[in-house]
Amino acid sequence: MSETTVKEAKMPAPAVPSATILMLRDGSDGLEVFMVVRHHQIDFASGALVFPGGKVASGDDAVRSQCTGVDGLNDVELELRVGAIREAFEECGILLARPKGQDVLISGDRLAELEHYREPLAKGKMTIKEFLDREELVLACELLQQFAHWITPENMPKRFDTHFYLAVAPADHVALHDGHESVDSVWIKPQTALAEAVEGKRTIIFPTRLNIEMLGESDSVDNAMEMARQRDIVTVLPHIEKRETGAWLCIPPEAGYSVSEEKLTR
Image (cartoon, rainbow, N blue to C red; front, side, top):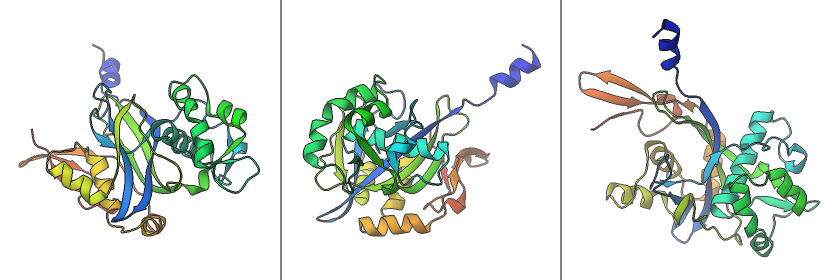
């Protein structure tokens, strides 16, 4: 094997641009977030409790004129927000959009009439632009609040460059998992999700756990949105450090999470 081939073999897989939404509401007992359970046959985070989201799709950057709140955003920032809204619609049925020319979000009744678009969008049989054109809708991108930015470690075979956003779930939009990539869903308090993971009732991967913990520092939707607005978003690219005590998974302390290193167990 040549030196060039060896170097190529060690190159990390590209990190695919992705976006996810922590959809929030104020429940009777405090802040709740909508989460889905990944299908066990999915090759990334199978069976885990996660936030709705996924890869940016072709055409997500082609709807600038059909979005509000995107002035000043470059094409990458635009497609991430569009991708986040599209994925939320595909995976949990909530759509942050307005009828063209109107100031209010679509109603729950109108949303129910759009249900049949979820599958063709998810399978790539329809672009977001075709959907918006057909239904004369405009995406409300200003309703997304940046929350976190994580990149999958370089040693992983499948990698994502994921931007996390917060959004308030419209009161009359019914959230429901898609039955394909996700097989169950729940509105859950951050503290409950963490407790159930400790008890072995839930599987929650490291990035999701730390973001749930951070979300749990807020006691209401308004508080969560304000805390996110005030926080500097630090990109998190976890890496493994080999020490005398074993292997440790490390992230930047300045990212503001409850831990910046965690010992790996085998």
